[in-house]
Amino acid sequence: MKHIVALSGGMDSATLLGKLFSESSTQEIHCCLFDYGSKHAKWEMQAAKELIQYYNQVPGPVVITHQFDLSAVMSLFKSALLQTGGPIPEGNYEDENMKQTVVPGRNLIFISIMAGLAESLNIETISLGVHSGDHHIYPDCRPEFIYATRWALHHSSDKRVHLATPFLFFDKAKILELGYKYNPIVPYQLTRTCYKDQELSCGKCGSCRERLEAFATICCYDPIQYEV
Image 1 (cartoon, rainbow, N blue to C red):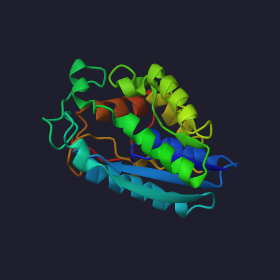
Image 2 (cartoon, rainbow, N blue to C red):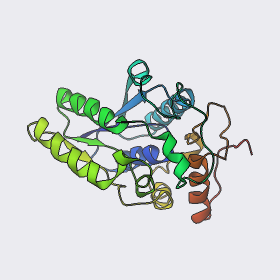
Image 3 (spheres, one colour):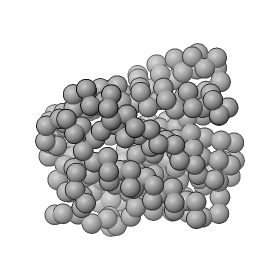
């Protein structure tokens, strides 16, 4: 069986890649890397490529890279997450100011591209690592969006392509727990979560704080370095 997965280089998509890699029925995994002009794009891409390199050195499914540059068109969108936007807000992930990081239509665009690739490569399933922690802030991560998009994708592909979101109702701590149970264990030391354009993760933006809280919840040490 072959799968297509959106790989950002963050914890959630890395865990999703780990899940697919550890499943005995998976033979080939196609990872879609999207540069949409975010402030942290350089660091996300680096993390995603290091994750792919890691899994390709372990016996198991072949992991294939597909990289898409959407930075030009999405530079017209309004979001603090983009190079064209304001400063990255700090605070808890659930805070209202984190809504400044919403990128309009991001997952809808990603899913459309992945669906087209799936049809072209005769692959039945595309997967996203969206989870319950995203529901408050990001409309295109909520169950209503996923259900509607799954229905639209099913019909637009003449019932050939399915959208899978196995972590839709899990929080980040639960996802982290799963990642440590897969074989091989997900290499979280290679992942990138911070929204800021800097080598070391800031530890202060909502994304960093949610990550740190997840590690604390399962009583594990976060293996990456932080600025603070």
